[in-house]
Length: 223
Image 1 (cartoon, rainbow, N blue to C red):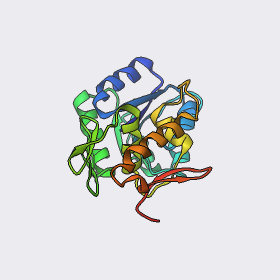
Image 2 (spheres, helix red, strand yellow):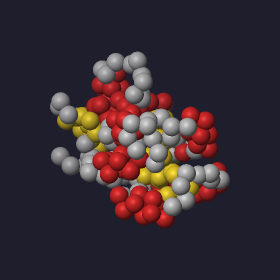
Image 3 (cartoon, one colour):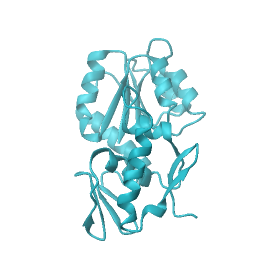
Image 4 (cartoon, rainbow, N blue to C red):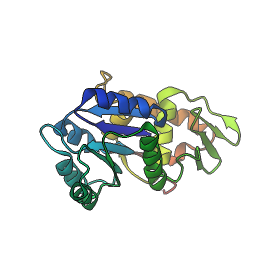
């Protein structure tokens, strides 16, 4: 999983990140402008979005992002106002929490949202034909044989299989796996894809890893 925490209070932002570390990789934003830029990359499984933000408020971010993405959103607010909650839910938020909140409640709400959007979540199961992923220990097997895939190679394969039949641009893949602040050059994506294809070829699975020239990649059963 990859989550984005949008909260201008840096201490609270850090605390939320620490609460949710077990869910996967977490990015942070402290103002609406930066948050909207990151959200538009379409690489997140969940956005936790504060209402009161510098530059662009949470409602405007939510309204804008709902024109292009269905990424789930948990909104945070310091106001215990029915009108605010109705407005946020009306704009497309999936859930709403009032600050301050308890860690257990946050984890429960995040778990519920992710379970609704991702059938594989919490079951720790992701399969494709004879390919099986162990999501908790980050390795993959085909017909019971463990593939020689570690680190980012594993992450790329899991991300592509999880988004089967969806085109993933090279930029999306880079931002998802290496992150926005990485000093790595773009061509590293092609290097890893090439290495991944070689491993998969031994098992007859390279045919499912499609390269769409000048666009990106897709995991697909279609010719």
